[in-house]
Length: 135
Image 1 (spheres, rainbow, N blue to C red):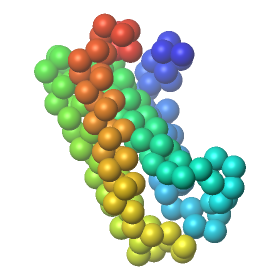
Image 2 (cartoon, one colour):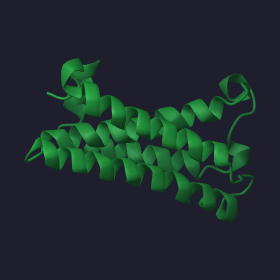
Image 3 (cartoon, rainbow, N blue to C red):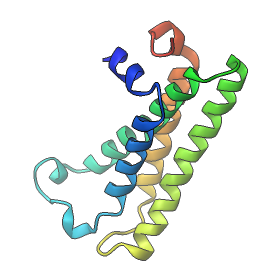
Image 4 (cartoon, one colour):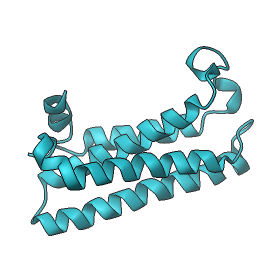
């Protein structure tokens, strides 16, 4: 699985696709989201936010690693990628509240976005090379 992710992140296509998937899911009208199945599980949306935004950081960080000039420049890039991920999460909550029918602002979603983004950034920073994710 790691090899597949590394291969997908050699160029910017997959990280950008993941970004568009996040944005598309976050602008779906509330009526389009089923209330049963997985979506009927309490706080399942928080798990989805952790995965989506953790994935954002993971995919863009691997892409950035493949183009790094130095490890220090990559750490800076990882920090910026993480901030961008969190900013997208915050901005999209306001977009949902103000412009998307049947969607609302949820501070819990922002915390989940932050948790997913920060967790992956920290894991990559401290175990990325040892785990083989960053080659």
